[in-house]
View 1: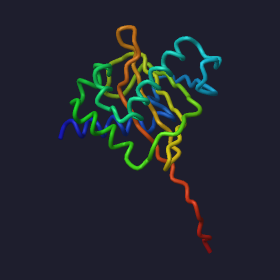
View 2 (view 1 turned 90 degrees about the vertical axis):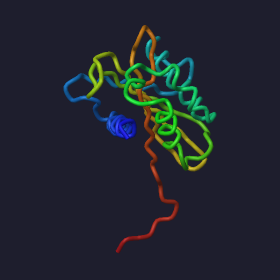
View 3 (view 1 turned 30 degrees about the horizontal axis):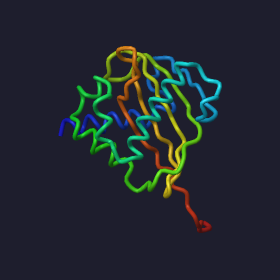
Length: 167
């Protein structure tokens, strides 16, 4: 039960990170125009986006179980491996087969609610699946000179195919 509550709290925090992760800490958004190797981004941003994409590719391949070992210590302290794997796998329910990803936006902060201080990066990526267009958010923390995943969320933007006029 405690792990489920922790996962729900982490996911609810992630759902708002496109606006602000923490109103007391500066959030510095960086838009990466395309997920191309030649995009004009800094080496640090390239590493962060690459790490987020590696994580997402594991999810695309149905290998959520492989995301636990390289995850950050704050995540591992807040939930169990089985709850993490079930939680992130459940978020992908109904999206269908992965098709492609477009743009990424990175926001940085040094503070997160109920988390140790550190440098955090929230990477938002527009993703296309066979059933839905979504925004995926991967939350990473700089730990031991590496960027490690500490959270994941997906916003399923449902668009109506046929509209009914309202009178």
